[in-house]
Image (cartoon, rainbow, N blue to C red):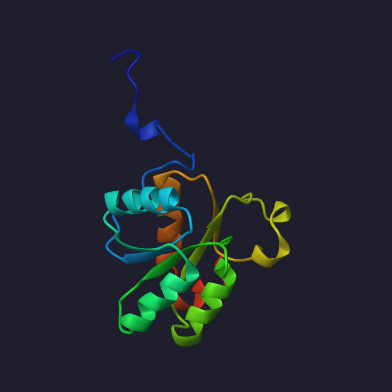
Length: 153
């Protein structure tokens, strides 16, 4: 058929491809902005993830205090929050859950030279993000061999 498109020759290389697979893991989202918490929860739930939310570092720590055996597969943590920033929170949680993977997010740029020094060379996604960008980044971290997670970028 003349003018027909051969689907085998179509290639899409953009970063907005659909996630590799639906999620089944439990994600703890920590952010002090209620709108961001709600939107992120909806994005992740849409792709099959179980989602727990905390509106502060203190609330996230309390969750582990009340339910010490709670199953969480990844923490999605805002870098900039009042009282306790995301880096401090992750350090505290890694004190009793050292292998728990994390992904920081913030309004800072995705480009490392434009971000503050304290959050370079860590797993990061810049706000705003699409649900596809977020779930793809989460899959990258969760699907890495355990020995590589600590050095994920």
